[in-house]
Image 1 (cartoon, rainbow, N blue to C red):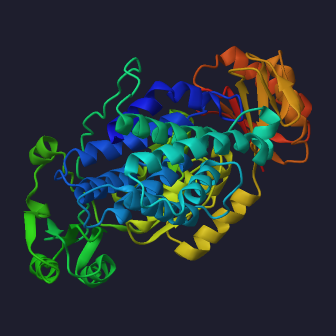
Image 2: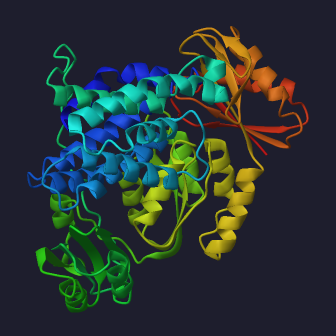
Image 3: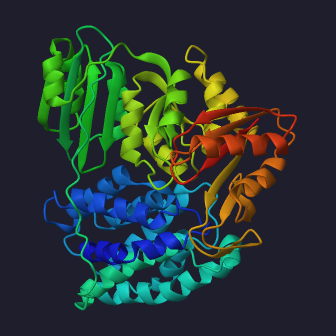
Length: 518
């Protein structure tokens, strides 16, 4: 059923991507949902062949592989399935009804301000539709879900002003419905055999990075199946003996421990207090030679810093700027949103007691929040575009008080405006403008403010809206020539004669120019 759900989404992933309201090249809701689902399935394939074990592994994989807002919401929906199947041997109608109800609770809690006309709206609609049907078989309940989902998806076009203006249904809702539809077809035994098959590929776990903070420290890793103590309580107790890395995650079925410590015996003692430990690894970090590091992928790092910064960047130029200002760049952004697991790996790799995270894309914020819940000492500065992130970077002080530094960076985010120039990938009516495929398109803080056939004219029109700014930074995309960059600089200077303008290589794909206004 799960495989068929992923197959159905894979067969329509381009259609879902195309439903994104803004006709820009980074419409990737379908891709994010599919990546999340495939990672979840890869974990599920490693589980014992029982309903509860598969659902638990699926939920863990979805959490770690979640990409973009849609992926994070999907991971919470799958968590509902896990909750409903705890201790169950069969997936019946009652379990499916309970799963949808739990999914609704988890998903709405994950979003600070749930909006109408989204995949949350679809989830609420199907949950309402199946209330009282728990005595039906699972296939009939799923048929009700799919049936109720059809008008619910259609309704998202009118429920959300942006969808209504663009004339499209919600991409996330459509993607979620496709997952339901594929699962229902599999249970009914008439899945569309003509659909391209996109089975979950094996996801290779990332290499472990060991961050040694103290001389003589040990790297301790083990699992505890069915822990008898709360994960949070175990983590708090281990913090007393941990160095820079104290990672304790899991649920009631399995707990994963990875700690750097001077007291491996104490870490094992605490683990044993929660149950029988397995897959125990204890390594002397100081004894790891460079040759061993190259062979295993384990790298010993210098002592942990007090404060570090992880920033998501869409290009090599942005990455260089981030490094020069003391940040740790993580490639991501348009069409390549980093997953929760990738963000968590970057946070751990930053090797600090406290870590600030700049998502720099509104579609990465939820994944960053999710990563922050899986470790300690993380503050997410909710930058929604790369210009806000670069402005915040200037305010980063690795020697400062973390709370004060975060406050100053948040002020920089709020004081920064961003213009992004790209090309429309399809005809669309958005923000009151009829845009044709191939036209230049300028977005100011995420809304279309200028469009037309002439790129420089569109750039100047959008730039004129920034005339009050004192400093403009023009970030040049990866496919832009020197001549084209010079022409854009001249046109922007004419539109904003009182502003100081600097030009930097951003290296971003899809967006020819990004303007940061302060």
